[in-house]
Length: 547
Image (cartoon, rainbow, N blue to C red; front, top):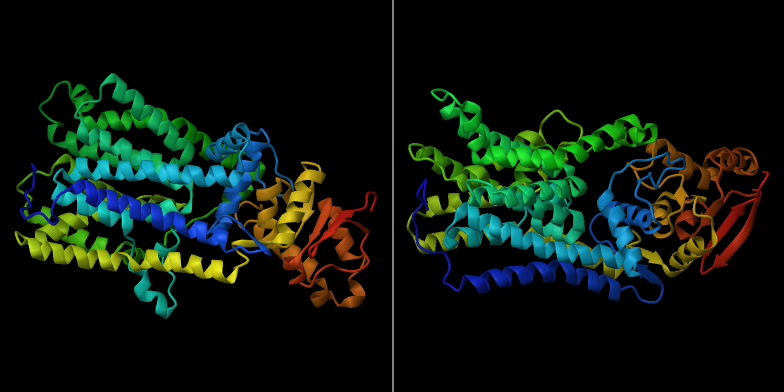
């Protein structure tokens, strides 16, 4: 391994193939068996909703797929009563909806099929990335194991009531990405592939340029923040390469272009920037999307949370950085420098003054894992047993948070948690709405049911999502107040005053009345409604025209 030498004995005995295969099989099993368990645990009275990690966003992805399924390519806010013209956003999920229609398959089946296929692509890209950056199997196999299986130390703080990022910011960790949704794993695979190409080849041939451009285009469709990460990493690498040769060269621009990373930067910019710029623009000029964008904030977690959530990899990554510093008279390999740039740039982007900081945590655990293995090798020196011992400790510390996430899903399945299950009556009522109401119907339902209606029927709701409902907090309060009006206004004021006025002002077509609405105090009395559906504890009432 050229550059900084970190000597030591192999951590494992060959064959490496079987070790890698075991890791891949473990990831697939642990990220898919819980879904099978949850589906089988539904029983007669409930239906599994299809999402175990963050069903709030999961159902919003399904709602986007529904728009594609009905033939749309222009995204409109599914959880807003007046969605506006929309824009060409979330094209990946719109495409999956079209794909489901072409294949005549359920949306959830297509969603999870792409998640599983994307997991395979991500694991292959992850393995290739570490093989290119760390070169030696005694380094890249442990790095692959840690990155593919590991997470943070949030499990240590859970008894104290702290719910750290390693439980829920899934895009940071390959394992949680594989557990969550298809666009996380496919986005990570594309980002890793782009960065790997430049490490492997000092000069991109015509085919390589085209492929990087297409990969960047795909990344801009699936995860525009991945494009930013690729540009920042390749841009910094280019400047570091160019800085020593900035003087004494007449054709400095030609020398700049000859740098490997400058080519990556350029072709990623060509492929990824146009659609990313469009996304930024349309979310600010369209009045409805602008309302969504104002509340679509994902601030960075507190610094202590980030440190805990990225450790133990982060702690040993610092040892790796220290090893670089001690051997600063030796130049870093391109792979070592890539890991270092991505880790440091990712942390800087995470705390940049920007409303979507947390999006830059995408894949941040990956360079930390690579640097951690370098740190472990440095600490172990030439002692194979010490290295094996240290790696085992680190891996054991990095596993419990992911295991707790899986156990939480199992508990939710055993208790039929209403966040991940629908009642059989709710599922049947949603089917009825899809088959018997106009495509642009507006349905009034509780916040929890409002999350499900656009995902399963494509119909609009007053409130259903904290980001994709414009003026979300106000709309949520209005809905909760409407279903619980007896508690706030008293029985004498319930009937045809504010409740009926609300239906007329919002132009509501149907009212959904199921167990979640009953939990909010049910239906106000004396409204101008007619019952059009009544089965298994769910009623659907149509608002009479002219009232």
